View 1 (cartoon, rainbow, N blue to C red):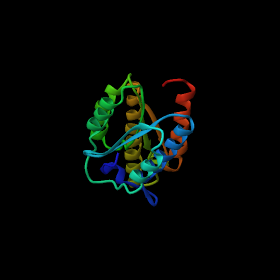
View 2: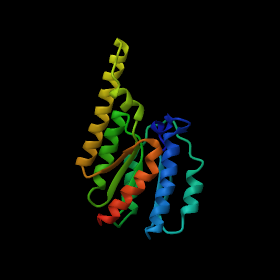
View 3: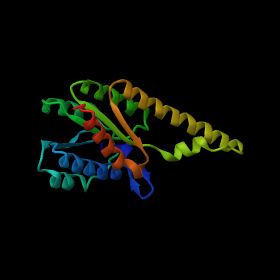
View 4: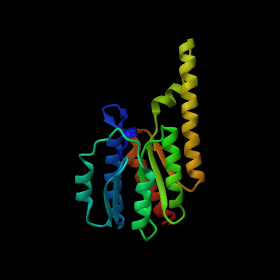
Length: 197
């Protein structure tokens, strides 16, 4: 997902940068396990699509490296519909995106639901550790009370979104940015170990 929500920065890097890095690490892990890898790049319209193959890591890196997030909302429905049309076998679909916008989450839910049960979707997102920290602080001023309440509501909404996704058969990975690659690979390995594909 290269849409507007992936423009947000965490430290020196954007959410999209962390997603690209985790995507490449996941692809390397999958190839080592003997799986095929494919990828789709999209925002408001498809930008690139590569059907699953063994020998395309180099091309994937070339396609992902120059990516820039844009200012448009992502069209999950078109991206997932393209995947369903082109993937005849059961596929692990890992979508690197952001869940901070309520309307975007509703579009994501509507688009991802038809993937189940034929495919196994996993939504991977960077959790906002700043909001979590703000929700846990002990306020001392009226302004801090307001910030803590707002952060708590935002964090609770975010957790509720993850629960709704899971209740629909959609797996999730939600961790701080510096843990994204390792957590995504660990989820992939867990899926492999439990023979869900």
